[in-house]
Image 1 (tube, rainbow, N blue to C red):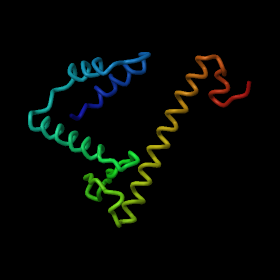
Image 2: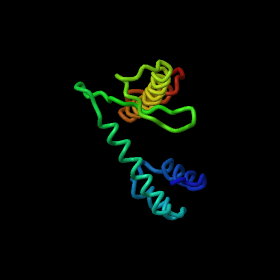
Image 3: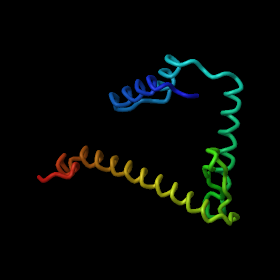
Amino acid sequence: MKVPKEVRDLIHKAIAESEAIDREAVKALIKQYTVGPDINTLIETDLNRTAQRLIAGCRDKEGVREALAHKTPDGDFEYVVIENTTNTNTLRQIDQTLQKKMRGLERSRHKVDRRHRLLEGQTNVWNIIGGNE
């Protein structure tokens, strides 16, 4: 379901003003401001989600995913079986995608760590924003 920008803005505002917000509150906002999809769209969405979960569940003996998503030139996604592919460009693109996700996760981890340290009193605002004491 495509959520209109106005609704996304309302949800982002609710999140910014809350200490925490649960999924039910977000769903209520979506229901309040949008018209639901038709039944065929719901079926297609559920099939896509189920297919993604099944593929993500394919793991090797070490528990590492066998196939990873790759965006094709026409904008669709395909799942590339890493051990079977011979396309080095695809592998390079998947690696770049994974690196980008790791950088984003690392920034989020640092944000959580800074907030945690501030709340525990182990630092002050100047340490967190990089200023001098």
